[in-house]
Amino acid sequence: MFEGLRDRLGAIFRDIRGKGALGEKEVDAVLREIRLALLEADVNFRVARDFIGKVRGAVAGAERAIHLDPSQQVVKAVHAELTELMGRRGAALERAPAGTTVVMLVGLQGSGKTTTAGKLALRLRGKGLRVLLVPADVARPAAIAQLKRLAEQTGADAFDSEGMKDPLAIAAQALERARREHYDYCVLDSAGRMHADDGLMEELRRMKELARPHETLLVADAMTGQEAVGLGEAFQRKIGLTGVVFTKLDGDARGGAALSLRAVTGLPIKLAGVGEKLDALEDFHPDRMASRILGMGDVLSLIEKAEAAIAPGDAQEMAQSLQKGVFTLETMRDQIARMRKMGPLTDLLSMVPGLGPRLRGMDLDEKELTRTVAIIDSMTPGERRRPEVIKGSRRRRIALGSGTQVQDVNRLLRQFTQMQKVMRQFSKGGKQGKLRMMRQMLNS
Image (cartoon, rainbow, N blue to C red; front, side, top):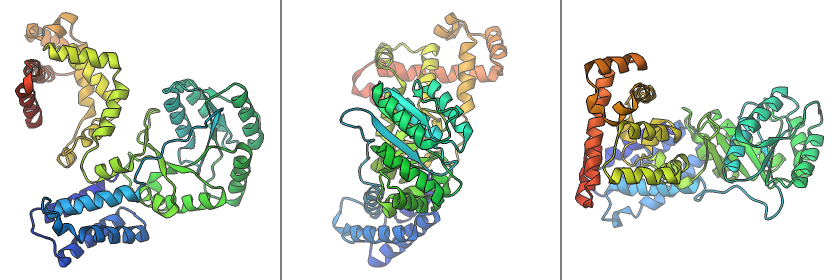
């Protein structure tokens, strides 16, 4: 998401880097290019116009910031306005002060409502909360079976609406059960249509009136572009919304909907679907997203992913091993497994400040990690702990067992030797040892 916009803005900032103070003519030219970049990213033209006006006002006094060069001055202004455009601060999911919190998901057919319900259930279950999923989409029979499967996969419960034809009756009985059995959250998966017709809106309006949800969230496909903005306006006008969940934010769409919808409707973006897996649902942080768009990385999100993927005990054990200089092929394999839990490699590296631009055009083969793990798994425990014993015949056996070539085994062993040297430098302690390790990692 936002890759095209990120590339365009990066090129604009590179062009003005190192120049002297920006005069009015130069500012006009830069802002014109930024406006075109926003429009190409499918940002609403009124939103783009207002955005440029605000950036112009911020840049007008940039010559006073003598510690920043012109590109930094513009980046600072654009970052601030992007953050403001998307909501300034993240909007947390509401929680009822007492009793069951009701969340109603609405949207068009195919927007990802049912999958989002499952992702939300997994997220809440991870916090130790009890969740009841309610399949109230009687227009799509497969939705009931799908939500039941998602409940099983996430450890949530699903209300049995099999054979029931009235979505309002489903909602009423499910809410009664949720309150009676003291569920923390009740998530209503409402019906969708191909278009926001009057029949759908009336059904949703009546369901909302009955359920009185604490959250009424529009689930919108980020790849629908400006259509999502009109959809948000329609749902807001006819039934009332409290926020938006964008799905497919990891796709190749231009991203203008995510930038435009809040500005047009005033609705906060609460959650973002960033993948197909059930754990690929994130809080939406406007400041972090602005940093990603400008190629500045997102260290906080990277840390949160690491904390979610690595148990505290494992992290402590890993740190103690590194401090002692203990780094084996088993350690390497375990680290790969933990890293893969955090998400696609390209996404993780793009969160590291400064790495985003360097990743363009690089072919990061996720299958290489699979081959690496297969090679290590084909070794004996003794070989994994003492790889120096792996000679010619052993290398051929390992290659055959892992379905790879001897060259692949050789390459892995060379990489491991280099990593082992770096970890030993780290274990020697002191600031200089850590600085040497960081330099080697950056230069590799």
